[in-house]
Image (cartoon, rainbow, N blue to C red; front, side, top):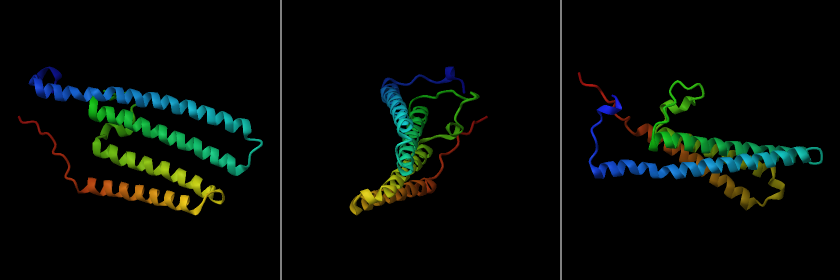
Amino acid sequence: MEQDSFKPLKPLPNLIFLSRWLQLPLYIGLIVAQGVYVIHFAIELWHLMDKATVISEIDIMLRVLGLIDVVMIANLLIMVIVGGYETFVSRLRLEGHPDEPEWLSHVNAAVLKVKLAVAIITISSIHLLVTFMNAPRLDEKTMMWQTIIHLTLVLSAISIAFIDRLMPSSPKHVKSS
């Protein structure tokens, strides 16, 4: 259906529909946050390269896990920025673009929730691995609570995916002849 064939909305529905653009500053803010993570990554990478010859292998591994953590959070930001904008604000119209993310073609609010939950669990897993590698320096209570929080995130993601499976698929719009 071409855009010209849409019937104009009445004032209140039009205002409600236009209100989705209020999210634009939020997505721009997340883009700025992405830039902050790029700067943070560069600084941490510089520190790693500067101290690589004087720190232990475990400390190098912990710093590399910190870099991976920054990358995973940056990936999460991209999913929220691109997927959220596409789902809740406006189409990006990237069809056919060579750099279009594969997942974007089938993103909706439900898919976005599951992808975000998996990304958060991955980030939590990295934090938990760092915690276990630092176990001699940490108290048992801290390690226990981080493990409980991680398991809670895993159970939440499983619940989200399960509930999403139970929900009926949205009906396909059928053209009438």
